[in-house]
Length: 182
Image (tube, rainbow, N blue to C red; front, side, top):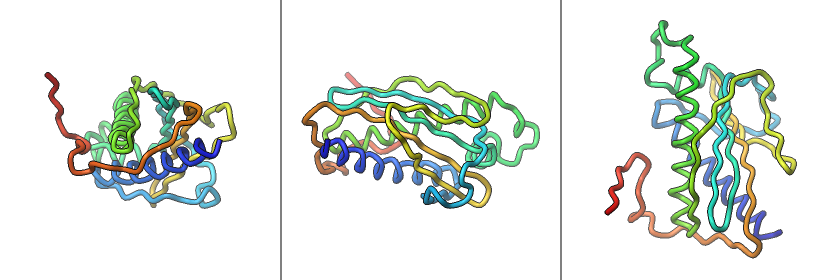
């Protein structure tokens, strides 16, 4: 149980860094917020659910965004008034962001000796969306002046699993690198 808590903490740290980095690559600075900071419960526009599995760990990542953050971070939308209301563009973008986020997390986990396989994201739209996990889960909340994001992570680890310290950061691929396989 203690090892699972240790892995959960490490996974959350990796996720926070990956989320902040991901949005900064699209010109949006988000910061990790305390669960009691405003907005306490923002109206999320869309959320993306993406599962992952591996020999030692499996789980689900849920990324929820407000409409403002979806628009600000999307290079297609930007300030283009014609596409700001196009729900398909927002839906595809939120799915792509969750895929990039989990891909970045995957790279960091590989540096720690943990390999995961990522599924395709499913994007949902609605009001008052929240995951119904097996255990009580609190989201990692990110805010900016015009919007918010939340990330829920549900994890299960193999009994006796222990995460390693990060190694080989110079040899590992960076987000966006093209990898060719023989």
